[in-house]
Length: 131
Image (tube, rainbow, N blue to C red):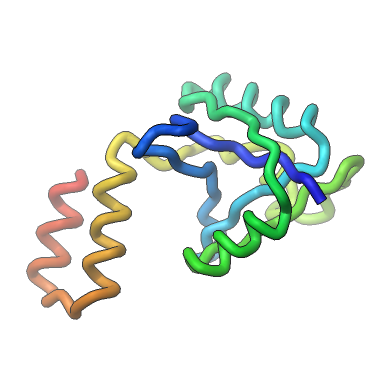
């Protein structure tokens, strides 16, 4: 099955996928309908968020990526009707967005943390540097 995902800087070394942070989980939206994905992009742009590109990709490929990265894939089906506030985020982005200007630094911290235990002072300093 082909799904539509939202990617930033497609084809570049800094390519990234749009995700949401919900209850300590990183959610990657997979849109069944391309029009829904494009509408979501428009809503992101209206909130002064960089506009991602809509890219068609095999659902299994995104699910494998998410599993490897520790993310949760979430399919937004055509005609989806939200039932909870969390479901609404599948159709409308949150009002407040995370700053992505340094997303690669965040990624590097995650990589560093996987390889070794950082002491508390070092972790505090890195968080302050992000601000």
